[in-house]
Length: 140
Image 1 (cartoon, rainbow, N blue to C red):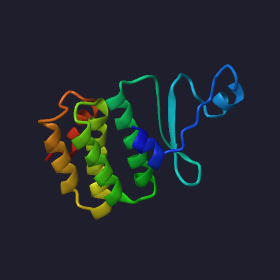
Image 2 (cartoon, rainbow, N blue to C red):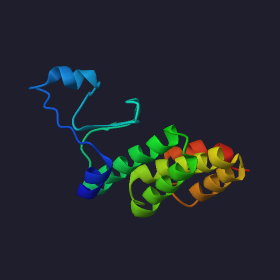
Image 3 (cartoon, rainbow, N blue to C red):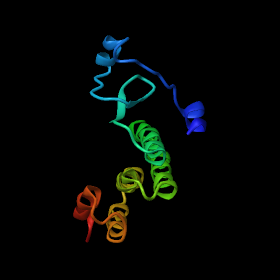
């Protein structure tokens, strides 16, 4: 996790009792709050609340992948989403990453088979997730 924070993040610690105006500025409802911004300062991803290290790290990477998606770098976004599935397969975030990997592939290529392939993969992985339900409309 330290490597990710050193390379891909600018961590900011805000104490709610000492800096309530900053806490409010970012709309934080609970701690910890992680917000990912694009280069223009627009929010692209957020999550709140404590998680075990593997789950937290998966969310950090999801924020990074969502940033690539927001930049319309769909090939890079797909690569990053699939990396989450590979490195953090037992996290709830992996199901979301699998879904967005299919969307990224479709956006990059315009080939609807990428969505069908993703829906098929959900038949064997993360079958009870909301993401599997969302992808089910892509099944042929």
